[in-house]
Length: 260
Image 1 (cartoon, rainbow, N blue to C red):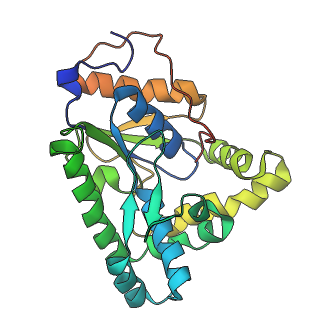
Image 2 (image 1 turned 120 degrees about the vertical axis):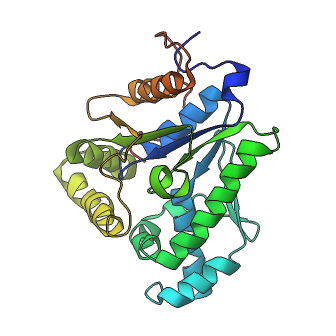
């Protein structure tokens, strides 16, 4: 059995929760892990971005916490869970590209630090996880869910909980390459706000820098993408009681850098 490969019985309804700071590789690594294990994938960070996009479209000021909370309860959000193509739709509109734009990245913390919004999205996230755990379209195939408080608040009972982290230097370089195509001094400085400031803002409402009890830390500072995926698959295999043998081919994740 290869690294991270589980028997059909072992991987049925498996729930893997992956937390960590910006630029640690949560999204791209989580998608690769989900594809390798045949699981669904939930990007909870995209849900917060979708709220920011929706509020801007509806003319709801992001600094009006009550209005934003009301807006999110009415938002017609549909989250795709296919790791090969995890689309995000609001009212039938595919906003997957729009929510990754700089103007959304710059304001999403205003949504993420809104406790009423966190409560509502947490409810939706738990429902999505439960669907894949017990009765998704693949009859409970299981899921990899990633985001700020997945391991501690949303899915503290997940079968596998991982804190994926990296040094600030590594995270800045990855995000600069992703956004600007370079990791020179100017690109790093232009990216700093998205990584350092956003993490500082979000850390006022959720802890994602230190692993909680029972959460396994994977530090990707000195690892490339494939090695990081292998490390997480190894954690999953250990938790499921499957032997880890080197050599598993990691599926490609198009248009994604490890730092997303």
